[in-house]
Length: 515
Ligand code: NDP
Image (cartoon, rainbow, N blue to C red; front, side, top):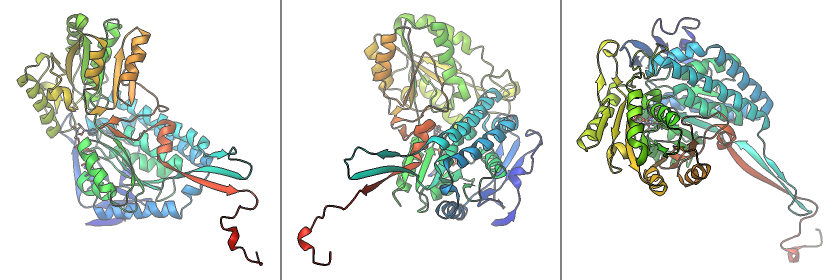
């Protein structure tokens, strides 16, 4: 049952240490916090403690949120404001988020199990995206065409696409929200956000910050709850013009089905299986650090994790000895400890899935070099921790080479020449990102161009800036997030064509004496 009282729950712990108690959040609809009796409990994946309770949003809640977003777009002021006004408000929001980075990072750690170091980096990224979108709001505009001959002139007007549905996963709850929301707002769109049911805290907190910064009611709405109920209701809703979804390829297919109801436009950022391709002439010290970072960053729960290491056979033994030595020095444990390198996995079903991939690796004959087990002693006793795991001699047909694991599990396969390295890297249904390690500029350019992925890093990994687009080739999805391409996703182009002077008639023979 839904209570319509304005509970202000998202703001109830304002100013308090986020770690001191659990937080309860309502849905944010049309500028009002709406509580629900049915709540989803969230337990810290590192400690098992209750940390948050989210409204179990229903299709009716989604309907109310879409109606509010529709009204705010169709008749409200937001889509009619100037780019400068939107930019100024987005910058104010960025500054308010920046002032609360530490508190928001703590919430992110409690709900996701990620380390505080990663969470702080995520929140810095959130601030950058809001600032970048603020700048783009000032600049983004259409174009005029004056070269159409003396009597025709045209303007291609860039208009906001309308009401957007933003579906957010649990691995980077604040950062992925920030890859979408500020760009949608900068374009003049309104939004209904559906965060993952496990990690909705920062979406609610950012909504509260937007509200306090002066974003008009209805422009941003947040409905928490489960994917098959709230998420499905949002993606199939006729009042939604555009859905930006990040999550699994399986759920992405459901979103495509749901979008058919009104042929809404989609951007899908789905799974990945990135390769780290290391040539013999690379800086092997840098490459070893990066290969380890690429698979353990955010516990490997990252769509661009470097989950496959492709290594030149001539340096493989020496490289892997060093990689394993470093992997065994990583600190897996308390995510709130600044010294911790690897935190806890999101929930127990996901832990089971990661362990099942590890078992498949062992059963399939890959050579386990390190890790391969759940950690349960001491600080790990009440959480979902997995030791960083490295498999060598992985067959390219094996599940651990082909499927997205989303855990700290690295599959190593050796290559003997450049063509084989490219073929192995491209041997995937996914195409989100890859990284190439070489000091030969020709190899770097040749291989970068041959790789079928939306991002290629050269001598770096999981890098970037808010100005750069993120998105997939193949079954990693379509559409781009971030930067000017990300903003343009949230627009439509309308061509307005004007004939100068009297138009040449199509039917001159029909003219009468009164013309
Ligand atoms: P999902 O794709 O199910 O979840 C992503 C988001 O989509 C969540 O907000 C979820 O809601 C929502 N959702 C789920 N079903 C629907 C639906 N039918 N319609 C609309 N929205 C929906 O990912 P999982 O949490 O199940 O993770 C499974 C696997 O997906 C992971 O192991 C990983 O391999 C991959 N993944 C990839 C991500 C990426 O960044 N590309 C991010 C997360 C997962 P809710 O969670 O509340 O049910």
